[in-house]
Every structure is written in C-alpha cells, then in structure tokens.
Image 1 (cartoon, rainbow, N blue to C red):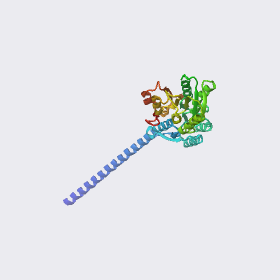
Image 2 (cartoon, one colour; image 1 turned 90 degrees about the horizontal axis):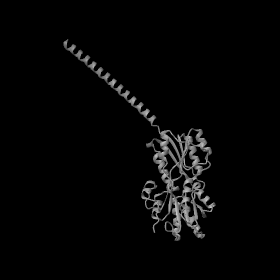
Image 3 (cartoon, rainbow, N blue to C red; image 1 turned 45 degrees about the vertical axis):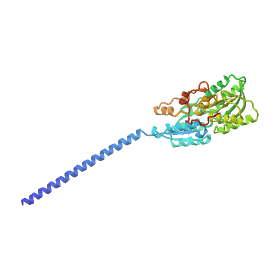
Image 4 (cartoon, rainbow, N blue to C red; image 1 turned 60 degrees about the vertical axis):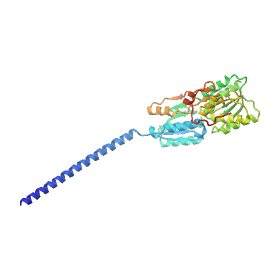
Length: 351
C-alpha cells in the first residue's frame, strides 16, 4: 500500500514537472516570436525610412569625348545604391533617343529626371510631361532652349563664358592678323553654340578672319577634326590659330599639322587652343606643344545630389566656375586639381 502511494506521488510529481517545463517552453517560444515580430517591424520601418530615391539620367555617350567620359563616370559614382539612389543612366548622342529615354523614365515614375541634352531644342513636350507627372527636372552641363518653368533647376557649364574667354585670349595674342580655323563640336548643341558665338562675332567685327569652318561631327571626333585641318592645308589656306572646341579635336588638328611639317605651340607658327581640361591636353600646354586650354568641369553630380538630399533645390541656372590656362599660367597644381581622366602620356605630342 505504501509502495503504491509512493509511486502515485512520483507519477503526479513527474506530470507536474512535465507540465511546468511545457508551459515554460511555450512562454519562451511566444517571447521569441514576439521579439522576432518586433525586429521585423523595426526593419520594415528602417527600410521605409531608407527608401531609394529614383533617378533617371539622360546623358551623352562617354565615347563623345574625354570630358563626357568623366561626366558619365561621375554620375554613375554619385547616383549609386550605396548613396541612396535607384538610378539608371541612358547615354546617346541622338536627340530623339534621349527624348524617348526621358519619356520612359517619366512613365516609370522617377522622382528626378536629370538631362544633358544632345541638342538644345525639341524638348518642350517632354519637359511639360515630366512637370505634369510631378517629376522634378534638373538640367546639367548643357542648357535647353525652353521656358524656365519647364524645369526646376540647372547646373551648367557656361558655354558663352567659355567662348568669350577663349576668344579674348586669341585676340590678346598680339598677332598682326588672326587667320583662324574654327573646328566646331556637334552642331546645335549648347556647347557648340556657346563656344562658336564669340568667334563668329569677332569675325563679323573684323577682329579676326575665319579661313576654315568645320566640325568634329556628332561625336566631336579627333579624326573629323584632323580632316578639317588637312583640307585647309590642301587648299593652301593661310592660318595661324586653331580654335578646336574640345581637346580630342585639338589633338586631331595637331596631328594634321605634324604630318604637314607645320610648327605649332609656344614657339611655332600656329597657335592651338582646346577645351575641357583633359590631363593630356594640359600637359601639352605645359610642354609648349599647345598654347592654351579652356576648362569645362564635368563634375556636377555631387552638387546635384546635395540639392536633392537637402530638399532645397535652387530655382533657375547655376553656373560652375571655370578658368583658362596657357603656357604662362599652367602649373602642376592646376593639372592635379582640375585635370580630368587619369591618362598620363596618351596623346602627348613629342618632338
């Protein structure tokens, strides 16, 4: 009897302990589930707080020039997922393709549409569509011929200033007469319009004479620029200044001179000025193979990103500061600070 009672007590105690452990396990499991749910809610809240900013970038192709290569890379580096952006960039030199890309970004519901236009005209309908869709439009590098109400803000290279500064330098060379070859970039682009205007005005005013007027084509190419100078040489044109609207085209012009045995640069017959501040061009100026280079700064993405992140976008146009250097003013410090495209030695003419 006593043994039976003892076994009954042991059985009851065991059942109680099992129940206690089960209850404790359930409580621990419930607590763990509650913690997991709370952590998931916090993660979702943090994800909402760090939602990526959608940006569509319409730009020109990096093959266009050393300047454009640096500009495209700058946009990709700044407007990255690591910096809080969901960004896509379309690079084409065809205005119709750029407009199609912009229309696609508007349809995709981007927050911001950034545009560097191949051509300054033809954008009104696209910009109005963006405005109607609540997409903030920011122009960069190049202006668009449209009503200012069609975009929020613009960070631009001052092409007219670049042209005026470069032409002032040409007029101050002290030459008895100035016979100039004008090598334009893509016709109708803001860069070409701005950099050509001052030359055309000086020609009309009789301050210089344009003896040949050609273009590097839609890609501002070295090869096309070389052909312009080769044609001028073949036609026995008398010229002493080459005004090439980017560094690659200036390089092509110099190749034509070298092939024809025509001296150039600081101690030569033909004075050379390029645009963009590629490092190889600045080294050519420093060595006296070229005479001057006009800056066009491709680094605009960081400032635009600051505007977006602050939520305080300026209205209207902001111009970047730019400078001209020649053989008298060029320094290693300027090349290090402002030169674009780390490409030591490429394109440098040696004698």
